[in-house]
Image (cartoon, rainbow, N blue to C red; front, top):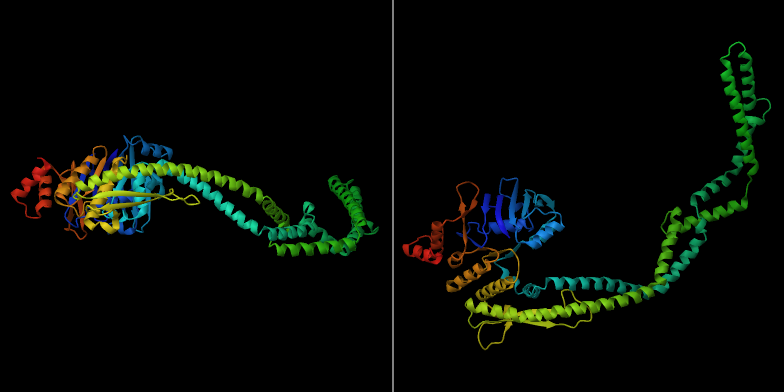
Length: 555
């Protein structure tokens, strides 16, 4: 697998670039300030680095980066794409758009994705070593990450941290329950008192709307009876002018008229029906009124009940109709308190078992780290000797702690030690190595920890700074050896490194227009000799420098 094409539009100093890349080792060179790192910037953005409007070329609406990967021999990346339904045969196209306002969009195989997904995929595609990698090398967490990387501990480390996560989750709940239990007696008394208060409402049969309706009815009983009997008299009981009597009179009169006009029959029939319905309604009203009576005792009970409901509603900050739900929640809390002892016992056993499981994995991880530490130290020692530190000795010091509780990433601490001179005990990198030595040690560590990895594309951004002469040639050969089974890209200022590449890319800057533009060109054999000669001797190239460059390139 490798990057096969990089396409950039309106990104920083690049107006337009379409570049095909080969497998093997590619170097990127150019004069200072020409923009050699623009390809790495573009790659970083395409693979999920944070973007802002400063990356958009002046007077452009947006910047666009397209990276095409060949996944022919990349099963991990292909499986990841398949799992996320983003697969597209053996190709992977990553696209990133950055707008003038700083907002960006990301795409994988022309499907929009989140930045988190893009970053997850990038870890399976490209590994970038920056020119300041030696500074992060002083961090103990970074040292542990490199050791685990060398030992291929990713799966075991994932199992360990999953075990830690499960233990931590139960331990936090257990701690909270124990703290709660210390105050549970007081809380239990409060809840029981509150439930007793609420049970005064007969919660099993509680219906606030019905209570309010009945209260309103009893409170207005005198008006109901008085007005009701008046309407009964008007509808039926008044023998002279009741509605029923008047309807009957009208119906009889129309029946008489129907002898002369048959159309009156239907109207008379409707009036007769109305008289019947009025009579039925009057009888229903009579039965209702006769069944009603004032009930002072019931009215007093309703007054007290509504007053109690409103008091409890204010106390519990709940609507009156929601008081049964409030009681249910309190009962659930009381039940939890009553059973917290059982839960504490269960969680205690769970935490113990999970701690044992964690410890088993942590012991396996520590053993793998110990085995890898010696092997890694020996390889780096051998390499720093090749890189101009003949007396250099590198050591990976691993200490296993015995804490009472599990720790994230295991029970080990690691420290990289180095001795640059014979007879002196190894000391921490920050206390021993000079800037140049630290750069060489950093390069040795990066190359060593990458040897056993399967990252398809590796990028080195001026990691060879501070190195020169014959050491630079060794560095170049090391990078070329890395490219035997993967793609390696390197930004460099060293001709010895550039001469080792399979493909040479040259960055130049054009100042003809108002806005500076950088271009990237793939050099021919002749152009490559001239560029290596420039790197050897500066602007004024001589026949000797050209001949030296050709000799270095083997042409």
